[in-house]
Structure formats: structure tokens, C-alpha cells
Length: 268
Image 1 (cartoon, one colour):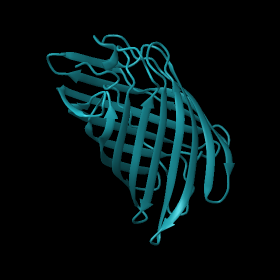
Image 2 (cartoon, rainbow, N blue to C red):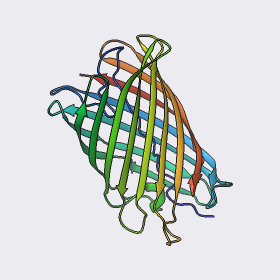
Image 3 (tube, rainbow, N blue to C red):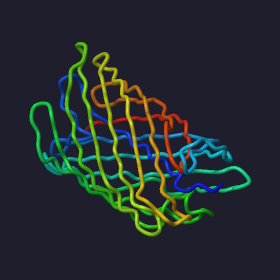
């Protein structure tokens, strides 16, 4: 069995900079003019099972992938943010597929505009271009697309209090124009964060993708839902460290991935 669109890491880390009552900067929030955040994140995952066309488990050759991303957000104005997120990856599939790719990974450039805000809630919109991948792979689905993709998102963030702790919720709904024979994609992501102490943030996240219908057997319809849990610890006012794990909990024509992530955040 040949599955497509299963070698691409679809995990994106929402990175709120919430220090008790301080404003959140990422996700739906935007930084003040002249300020921003840099986040370096590494992902390591593998899979030896996949979800087939009907969403049932099926064995596959061992898939492994490592990816590193640098997320840079800069406040051009108090309401407009420029975002740059370059990435590299190395992925492989064991025999009999015997595929390998090392090169450009999940990368994009985007602009995010805040359209409404009050003391606890913010709404923003995002438009971005995801870069095509570099050559050198022997199989297109493993290396990703050879053409740009275009992302459009609506984001909503809200600061909350729970059991005496400070926290937030963040939602993102979007549509991705893929082009070529691949179907376009709908995305919905959700994050819940809670500060257990002034320095320790717990985040539970859900990342969901469902493609449009496709009658092309070389690029079938696919879907994937991932759950992620991580801890973020504030080392000092500027630096934070993140560690966590993620798993694919449902899908169609998609790997059942398990993985870990490590991140380092710098606020400026």
C-alpha cells in the first residue's frame, strides 16, 4: 500500500509569552512595535503504522523524521506582525520503499494583522506563503511539495483564569491552497495553556488537517489529527525552554506518528 502526504510534519507550536498578567504575543496575539520573539524548535518522530483510506490501522515500513524550525515574529507596528519560519528536515522510509530526503522542511513567510482586541480577547488574521522544498529526494510525498502553498487563517485568543491559575485559550482556523494535483487543505488548531507557577506553563494542543476530496489515486484525500502536550519553563525574563511529545490520534491516508519536541524561546 502506498500512502501520500504522510511524510510531512504538520505540528506547529503556538508560543504564548504569558507571564501571569503580561500580554500574550504569539498565536492570535501580536507583539508591540519593535518587539518580538524567536523560537527554535526541533521535532523527532517515527511511525510503523498508518491510517488507511477508511481510517483503520495498517502496518507500514518504518518512517522516521527529524525537523528543526526557527520561528521569528517581529512587530512592524502594534497591530501588524512579520513572521519568518525557515525549516530543515531529514526523513526516511525503510525498505521496501527505501526512501530518504534531507533538505528544506516546513518553511513559510507570513504577515499577521490584529483586527480587534480588548483586555482579555484578541482576533487576528494571517496570510502566508509556504516555501517549496529543495530537490534531491527520490519521492515527492516524502520531501513535500515542489511548489509554493498559500495559507489564510483566522485566529482567536482569550486569557482565562482556572482554579486560581492564569491561562489562555487560542484557536486558529484556516485554508491552504496547495496547487498541482494535491487537494487543498482545511486546518483547525487549538491550544489551552495554564501557568501552574509564575515560571511553569503547561500546554495541551490539538492540530487538525483535512484535505479536500480527490479523485486522483496519486494524490488521494487525506486527514490527520494530532495531540500535543508540553511544558514551558521560564529561565529568566527573556528565555524559556520547552519539552513535550505528540501523537497522531486519528487520520486517513496518514502516518500514525509518535514524537518528541524540544524548544528554546527568546523574547526581545
